[in-house]
Amino acid sequence: MKSFWALLSRDVRLAVREGGAIGTALGFFLVVVSLMPLGLGPDLNLLSRIAAGVLWIALLLAALLSLNRIFEADHEDGTLDVLATGPLPLELVTAAKSLAHWITTGIPLAIMAPVLGILLNLDLAAYPILVATTLAGTPAVSFLGAIGAALTMKTRRGGLLLALIVLPLYVPTLIFGISAVSAGAGPTGLAASFLILAAISLVAIVLGPLAAAAALKVQLQ
Amino acid sequence: MQTLTQRLANPARFMELSARLLPWISGAAGILLVSGLYLAFFASPADYQQGETVRIMYIHVPCAWLSMMVYGLIALSSFGLLVFRHPLADVSAKAAAPLGAAFTFLALLTGSLWGKPMWGTYWVWDARLTSVLILFFLYLGLMALRSALEDESAAAKLTAILALVGVTILPIIKFSVDWWNTLHQPSTDFTSTVDPSMRLPLLVMAVAFTLLFFAMHLKAMRNEILRRRVKALRTQAVAGRDRLAAQAANHGAAE
Image (cartoon, rainbow over all chains, first blue to last red; front, side):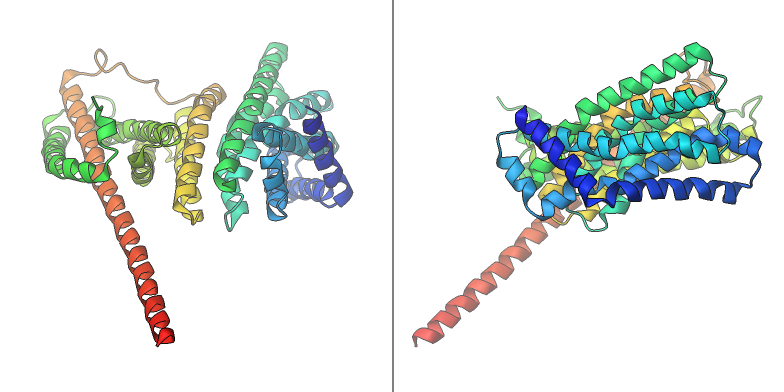
């Protein structure tokens, strides 16, 4: 367990001190969200109606950009081979790395989302819900994404392939993330979609590290 | 006592058995397809509401059924590869993926051709259409991942992992999309609500398409095995030539 936390804090520290990674994802998030009104017209009513969807899609795309770095960098410099032969089971290695990705990408994007909501005239009452759902939903983004990152670790043109593999898996997260924020669901509907979102994340937390570790084992032999 | 799957682990035995089976399956598929098409287009009545467009259903429903069955087959083969390391499992999964994608595409295409006169639009974002579209994306992902990896044995195992992840997530996707929007008619209980004059051609077409798939799948598996043999022989030939060249060089040096 000690080595799990050590690996987690190493990955978080690397992401923070390298800079770049977190800032780029946030910048990308900002740019995609600002392009929307330019493409759809500045009608505030329309923007307010589609704000939740735009924020979630932009968030997924921003997270997607950083996914391929989960394993790639460590694979290139050989760290991954050391980790694979170390005492920590590979499943926990992938779990730690996915968790680190969530902390360094998922949480910043979730915090950034309401700020960008202002640009889209999102209803003020929806702000706390937006933060809560993005926090509950982004673990699924990181942990499912880790599967794709592990599968495409050695491929050329990995980024595009990663998107093709991972985006279909994000459909449930997207649907329930948006339905929670969209008004009109009522408190029960809101609670239902929030709980389902959390359940999807929990499934991803179990499934992701297992599948990612299996994929790494194939490639590290 | 060996089970059939164990005996088939020997590719030579599979080639022999499939060579014997293939003409029968293709023949049965051909006969059923012709008679099914005759029943569907000439011998069955037009629907009182949908008119002639109901005949699209005889192609659409078998394709939609195969799109799911083939993914099930790929998942099963992937399981067989990862757990039992069955040598034919990967051949089966690899051969099935493009076929499954093609049937899924046909289901989407025929559905949208039917949707234009019936719903007034080629595409609606209805739950069923959307989940079949996502199934199509999963097929594309499988094929793209395999083609992106050079090492064939790693490619086999990695696509198998992706196929199993897909089959785990698929029910969640299906559930979420259903929850999201529903317009498509729910699955029909074919024993009761479909008129016998339409049930028979539909049944014949479903069996015909299933046999057609298995005929193409067997053929594709045979081709894949032959392709691997050719590749192995080429590698051997190159290695043999290198060895001869090395021997000749040694010989020359000794003299």
